Structure formats: C-alpha cells, structure tokens
Length: 321
Image 1: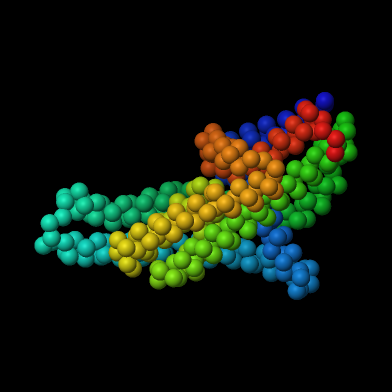
Image 2: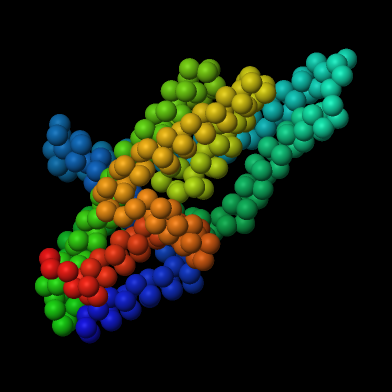
C-alpha cells in the first residue's frame, strides 16, 4: 500500500501546483496536449515521409496553425468592430420611418457596443497578462518540442517512483498515459469535424474569412466549453458585419449546430468509448475542476479523472493487469 499512498501524493502535489501556479502548470499541460497532437500528425506524415522529416513537419504544422489563429484573431475583432458599428447605423437609418418597438432599437444600439466592449475587455486583460503569457507561450513551445525525448528519459526512471512494486507502478503510469493519448487523439477527430463544419458552413453562407473561422474552431475545440465562446466572437462579428441581422442569426445557428453535434453525438461516442468513462462524468469533472482550480482546471480535469480511475482499479480494487 506504500506505492498507493505515493500515487495519491503525486496527484495531490500536481493539483496543488496547478492551483498555486496556474500559468506555468497550464502551459506545461498545453505543451503535453500539443506534443500528443504532434505525434498524431507525425504518424500520419510518416506514411509518406522519413521519420525525422515527418516529425519536423508535424511540429511546424501544429505550431503554425496555432500561430495563424492567434495572429488573425485580434486583427479580425478590431477590424470587424468598426464594420459592426457601420452596419448597426444602416439598420437604424432603415428603421427611422418604420414603427419599431423601443426595445428593438435599444437592442440594436447596444449590440455594437457589446461587441466592441467584449473585444476591448479581452485585449485589456491580455495586455495585463503579457509577461506571464510570453513565459507561458515559451514553455508551451519548448514542452511541445521536447516531450518526445522526455518520455524516453522518464520511462527509464519510472521504477524509482514506485519503490514497493516497480512493475505495478510502471504499468499504472504507462496505462494512464496511453489512455490520455487516446483521449487527445479522439479530441483531434472531434475538433477536426467541428472545424470543418464551421469552415464549410461559413463558406456556404458567404461569411468572410471562412478558412480562419474553421481553423479557429478546430484549435479552440480543445478548450472544453470555453473554446466555443472564443470562436463565437469573430464568427458572429463577421456574420453581422457582412450580412446584418441575418448573418448574426446564421452565425448563431452554425455554432449551435456544431456544438450540439459534438456534445450529443461525437464526444460521447469517441471520448466515452476511448476512456471507458461515461460522458456525464467527463462533463462534471471538467466543470468542477474549472470552478475549483480555475482556467487550468479545464486542462487537468481529464488527466486527473483517468489517473483516479486507474488508481482505483490497481491500488484500491486491485484489479489484475
């Protein structure tokens, strides 16, 4: 039982560090997530290219897609905010001679202000976190690039973490990590569908920057529940600026459709089957950890759930390998 106590201690230490140092620990977790995505992409490229070349290309592809999304996010919001104001003015001028309830006119007036306020709030908050964000970004990139080598080093030292029964401890650690890899691989498939759906729907309904919107939806889908809010801001602004209220409604319908397909069909089928954990417990874990730990809790919820499940199976119920 000595190893079981150590396993619990490792988990408590990890969660404590996540609570006390959210930027650093969240950056490390993001790096691990991205390294698994890089492995997933590298295995695909390896079918056509040499191993080292496929790995380099996978790193460039994954980090390049993220850089593309971040690089376009704020310019789109700032530029579209101006167009939103212009579109609202057109609607108000059109309705000047029409009997429209005051609450509708008030809604239209506040709509543009809300969009710009959201954009300014995000920008101001991020500016206040610039030093920490730069540090976190560096950690994410470095972790993404070196996790592959670190796995080899750590795997050779795993027996030191479980002095009582090294074989059982190594089995526990490798099983937990493999299940986490399966979760991330499943999330790649889910996110790819969401990104493709949002991009194609934006293209069909002639919402500008459809490729950017699809890529952003793909990237932000890895952030449970908060990701849809991030991708919604530019989509709704672009839809409203280009097509008025009709575009805004179309944007909302695209997001709702993508979210419902993911929540009720894709995620339960792919993630629950991969982890052998009911989707409801996955949902509760993400919400609970996000509420207790903060933003970083969103990223550690699933690894912790997998860790606890395997701890229970191997050190409490003592299921055979």
